[in-house]
Every structure is written in C-alpha cells, then in structure tokens.
Length: 382
Image (cartoon, rainbow, N blue to C red; front, side):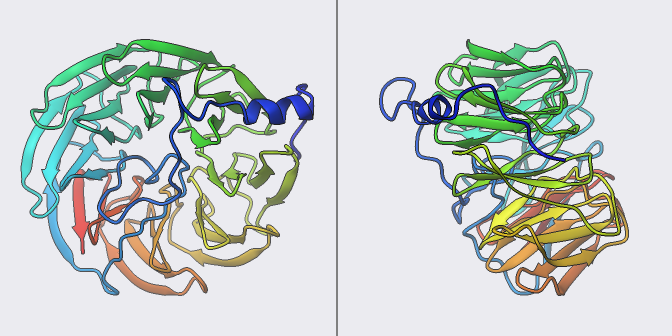
C-alpha cells in the first residue's frame, strides 16, 4: 500500500501549509506536543495527539478509588483543574473529584449514549459528542448545558479546541468548526464517508484519516482543504503528529508514516506474521511510535526507519490507545488488563486486571492515571 499524491502542486501545497495566520482573530495558537503535568484536557492529551504526559507516576501503581457508572465506558477521560470528566453509554457525562472520586455532577445527553467521543476542557466548558449526533458544551461548575449543536450523524470523534473554536467530526461525513462561546458554525468540511477519527493539528492544519480511505488536511482558520491523499484503506484510528511527520494505523493492517511538508511516505509497517487491523491511535515519544493492534499486541516502531523495536502480546485485541510518561507505556487491552511496559524494551513492569475489556484510553495528570472499563467502572491509580 502506498499514498497517492494530491493534485495540489508541491510549492502551492507548502505555501498553503505555511499560510495559517500567526496572529489575529483566527490565529492558531502554538500547539503543545505533551500534556502538562497537571492536566489532560482532551483525547490523547494535546492537539497533536501524541499521548505523552509530563506527569510522573509511581513506579508501582496503587488503586486509589473506583466509581461505578451507569453503563459501559468507551469514552476516555479528561482531567483539568482537579476534576475528571468521562462519558458513558447511558448518555451521562460525569464530573468527579480527582482526589477522592466523589461525584460533583452528572449531565444527561438524552436518549442516546456517549460512545468513544471523549471530553475536552477549555476554560469553564467541557465539550463532548453523543451517538445521537449532538455536540454538547457543558458548564464545568454547574453541569448545565451552555449550548448544543446538532449534526446529522452519530459522533464518535473527540473534540479538539484551538483558541476560540472547537473541531468535531461526525458520521454525517463532515468535520465541523464551531465557536466555543456559543456553538456558531464557522465552517464545515465534507468528506466521502464517516469522520470517525479525531483530527491532529500541525502548523494550522487539521489532519485526519477518513472512513472514505482518504487522508485529509484542512486549514483550521477557514476550512480550506490543503491535502487529500489516498490512504488505501478504511481509517478509524486518529493520527499522531511529531516533528512535522504523521503516523496512523489502517484497516489494511498497516501503520503508515508520512512527511507532511513533502507528502512523501516515510515508511509503512506491517507485522510479518500477524495481519490484523489497527484501530488504536498511535503514541509518539522519544523517537518511537507505539500502537495497539487487533492482533492482541502492542507494537513499538522506530520513528525514523519503520522497523519494529519490540512487540508485547496481550490476551485480546488492543483498541485502547497507549500513553506514555517517564519512560513507561501504559496500555489497556480488551483482555481487561492495564499494562505498564518499559518504553525501551517492551518489558512488562506491572499489570492490573479489571475483569472487563478496556477500550477507553488512559488519561494521566497530577500523578494519577484514570481509565474506564466496559462494565462501567472508572479506575484511578496513583
């Protein structure tokens, strides 16, 4: 499988990539590539979706508290200002105290639940999409709706906040940009199928693979398409961007690397024996790409060469997206276990059995790790 080139000439493409304004009303702020030690404000921790936290966790984790929700949790938690936010299949957005696990408030999205869409927090608002296609902005203090925006398809993508706008994908085939203050539509970008993945941001452009088998790049300031490449396969995983290079897995059993400035493929990785789709979103840390596979393995790939550094076998497929902190990888598996692996070697350092599949991804902040399970239990370790 190889990327097919866009019809945009390279000099024009590069100019467009560099054209996002640096200042002004529609400016795109500098994008962090790690989550700060005290917060994990969105899916994968930051708008580049690197999955890396500056927080340091204890060498051996201890279960600090659990919270029993009303339904399965596929939504990955957000952590901000000492609070944890997570959604459930019952359609409940829950706010908990990070220190104690005490419930602060709950918000109902209505009849249809919250799937994989994960909360994002900015200021005094927390944002999330539901399976009925409605996008919600909720007051972090009161748990009351500030505004809602209705799409025409279910929302499994997670929101990404950039300045005064929030991006969200929908199964109606559009990526939307909305004003954070009131939900006003700023622009929408049409694809040829569902938008399942969460976009990753680099240099003023939102990048994501689509269920239309295309890899898209959309200028954040105005919704203009700057990249449209064939990825050769259905893509549900969100991409990760590091140093101007993007990496993501596909349903064609590959992990792809692409240089965003030149559009040239860097490498493509496929396990030599086990050929299964990649649904997990990749982690990028210290020159290594780490991703879970439906082959039951966690794969670590050299960012430069695309060669395997190590693999770790679990007992079921790994749809949860791994995260990293302090030279360690934290990965959930559908075998119900949370694994802690050495980043350099893949050696298992610790595991915890929740007895239910882990599809949600871990969130790390303030020396704590939070993850939800398919039996509706939210776990906090520290």
